Length: 117
Image (cartoon, rainbow, N blue to C red; front, top):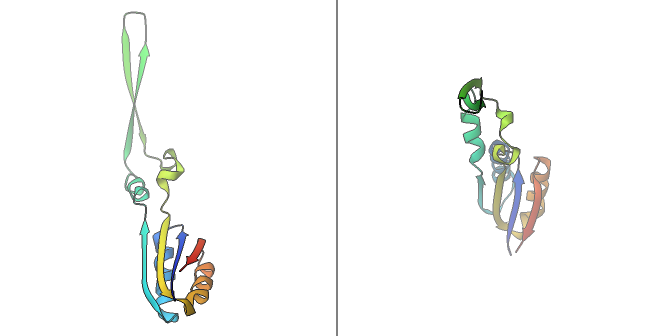
């Protein structure tokens, strides 16, 4: 019986390592792929850049002054869902190797492991 196993990893590097381990040690794996959220990569690319903040300030009721504040980019200013590099893994195998695959995924740090036929 053909079985599909899905799970999540914290980053694509962990998923890639787990899939390599599964391909090398488990027989009957038809397909093993992973997909990750690329918004976390965009947050990483901005590291080292500069952020400009415009601060309007009212001096009197008729005159206004606009100040610009320059600061280095900090990755902590991006909310957590946008920084996440969560990776979804999809494995299609025959039913005989599903328990071995689940144990390898668990030992490699996978979360939300689900299997179904």
